Every structure is written in C-alpha cells, then in structure tokens.
Length: 459
Image (cartoon, rainbow, N blue to C red):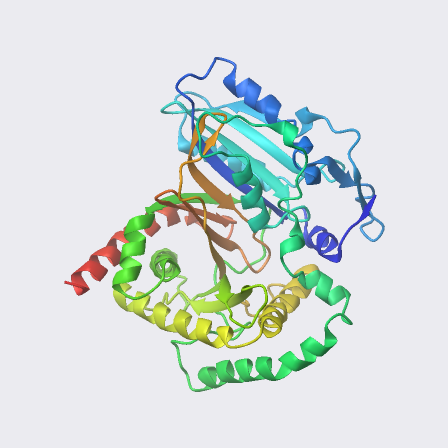
C-alpha cells in the first residue's frame, strides 16, 4: 500500500466528468513487410502484459470515492481486456475515421476502480499502417514521463522485439519535477530558500509591471492579464483533436536565418493561424493572445544544470505581418529567458508556482472563467527521437501528444519532434470554438507564408 502524494491527489481532485485529467499519445506505425497474419493480435497480447514492465500500470486506487483516504494498492484483479482495446476502421480507412474514434476515446474519463491507463490498437489505415492510442492519468505520469514511457517501448532496430523479462521500471513517474502540490502541502520545506528568493521574484514582477505600465507590447506578460477569447470559457465533455506535421529541418533553418529558435518560429506560425481563425469567427481581441510556455533554462549556478520555468509570451495575433510577428516573438522570448536565467532555481520554480496556484484554486472552486485568463493557450515543444524507431518491427511514422484542457484554458498545443518531422497535436473543446478543426490547415498555410517572408527578407 502506497499513500498518494499531494500531487497525485491534486490531479485527481482537479478532474471532473467534463474535464478528464489524462495525457495521451497517438502513434502511427507502418506494418513490417514480413508481418504474420496474427501480428496485431500478438502485439495486443504483449501490450496487455505492460504492467510487468511498468509497475505504475499495476496499481489502482483502493478508495477512489474518498481521496483523503485513498492509497495506491496492487491491482490483483487486473484483466488485460479492460485496458487493451482492438479496433478495425471501416474500409477504406481514413485519418478522419481514426480521429473520430480517438476523439471519442479521449473524451471518456478513466475508470477509477481500475488501473488508470488504456491502450487502443487501431488497424485499417491506408498504406498498410495502424495506430496506437495510449492514455494514462496525470496522477500516474506527467507529460515528459509519458513520452519516456512511450519511447522506452521502441527500439532503433527493426529486428528488436519487446522483452518483458527485464523486470519493472519506474520510468514515467513524477519524481523528476518539483511538485506544486507537494510544495503547497509542506510549506515548512525550504523556507530559507523561499525567503531568499523573495527579492528576486519582487524584482522580476516589478520589471514586468513596469513594462505593462509603460505600454510595452513586446514584453513578457503578467499573469491574468490575457484577453478573454473563445478558448477561455467553461467546457463541456466534447473534445476536438487536430493533427498537423511540419518539416523540422526547414523550420530549424528558418530559425537560424532570423537568429531565433524553433520555438519562436512555431509560436509565430501558431499566432498567424489563431489570428486567421478568430478573424473568421469575428472574435479577434485587440490585444494579442498569450501563450503559456514551459521552458528549460540553462543555469551555471544550479547543481542540476537545468531548471524549468514558464514564459508567458504573446502570440502577436494583433500583428498582421508574419515576419514582423516572428521578430517580435524573438524579442520577447530572448528577453524573458535572459530575465529568468538570472534568477535562482528556487525563484524560477516559485515564479511558476505563483502563476499556477491561483489557476488551480480557481479551477477547483469552479471560478476559472470569472477572472481574466492567466494565458490563452498552453504551448509546449517536447524533443523526440532524431532516429527512426520500431515497435516489434513496425516503424513509427508519427507521434502526436494529446494533453489536457480545462475550464478557462480550452486550447492546448503540443509539439513533438520525430526524425525530420514536427508533430502538432491541438486539443480543444469545439462547443465554444466552431470550426476549430481548420487549425491544422491554417498552421500549414501560415508556415508557408512565414517561410516565404523569411527567405525573401534574407536574400
């Protein structure tokens, strides 16, 4: 028996029937050329044995109705058929058919009386491909951990097969990151460090506040000053999933030409797509939408070498020129990284906590939409594998990360790189966002427009 951490319990408390709190991944794979007829059935059986490899898949809540008393216990009644689902798309299989099926699966909360994960194996895609949709509750694993778990299933060789004899692994659990819930639950821990961080935080917020008072638009935003948009309303249980691919090497080259980063280029592309979408809905606010972006900041003074923080940068949806939008984003992110890079790891983490704590409390109390949004959308870019990966001989063609949306924060854009591809997955709630399924086409269009502007300017 294992007591729930305050973080695990916090993610379970944040969940509601219309806002499930699981993270997921959608993988598109190419069947091996020599696959036997029972290949997918055998793969399904192997996936059913994953709790042998990942202990977090072998536990469940002993009292899911009362989280104050709930504990993790061994799932002695584990039945693979309750977690492994095998489908065949109607022929001819289309990506739209796959997305409809995956969207319905993504909408459904996980059954708290069972281990909090599911695998969906979906066959019938054209060109001899199939898909795997895997979802895991955030109480078991965070987004970074989920990526590591998924990648640990794969090999860089088409000849390698899944080996369940290597024993269990704790990969994927929350041990790598400081937990806001743990910090709130044990305020005595590190009180001296927190006290020393106060001047740094005061200086940071004073600088941000001065920029706001002076009307500087090309600066990092204060939390809870973002405009109200279609993406920041109360949600229902419906979800929309939009997928899009962009070429990694070309985006990297664009970033190099303008002395920016891949993130800068992607933010500018998203800003153009969101601007066009909101214009079509007659709902574009005068001030820019703001992205909440987790980032890793290099630090020479921290023992761990890296620290995580959070940048709130405008998408510059109020800027019609694509190149000018990118240049303004570069200016903001460069300044933000410089400011946050100069403060300690403790102050950086506390800055993130000061943003998220009110957001969590507002969500738990049902008041998320009664104040201006902290940010308008979450944007994150997770590094994937630069090399080809294989699962039981099947080549992984694409990996799309599907994340969480909540009341007041109904748009999540997550990108994972795979080989020479940037895989976008956009999660949202279509009830208040009509036509949101067009964002994929809009992203590709604005990528082309930005590319043309960058190369024209650099000639």
